[in-house]
Length: 198
Image (cartoon, rainbow, N blue to C red; front, side):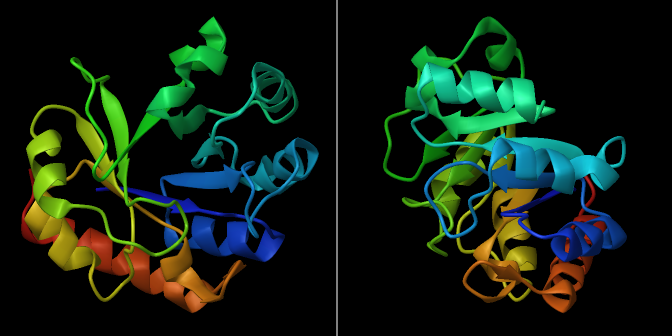
């Protein structure tokens, strides 16, 4: 089970995520209380390089914003909405994880990996698990939206995703990551995956 923890904005959050064994860390460049600058993200991600996938999380960026993030932060992957493809360079497209949202029309062909999200990122709103399960049978789907340690096992059983992604569900208050909740989430996701290995 691929586990992504999003909204990393402090050294303590990154350290807790790495200690818990997260596979990917998300750094937010979209308008958000979790937003960091490309320079901040580069510094925060230093201990994670080679240990976890460092993901640049954007929303409707301009081509200039994508270029700045790619050059300054140098992400392993770039996560933006499907509609943002026009702003991406060829290099960015090679690392792109498109975000599909509940209620959104799907493209005719899906890329090899997508993130399926609730209507608004970071708001704790659940995605449509029934639709997500259908998509998970055709592509590597990372399920996001309203997940936390109390429901991630149920979500994994229902959707059978390639991975899960969490942000607000591992916070003690909006924008403030909690080491205990990080550990609990990763542990619950791994245990659920072990119960029903692919």
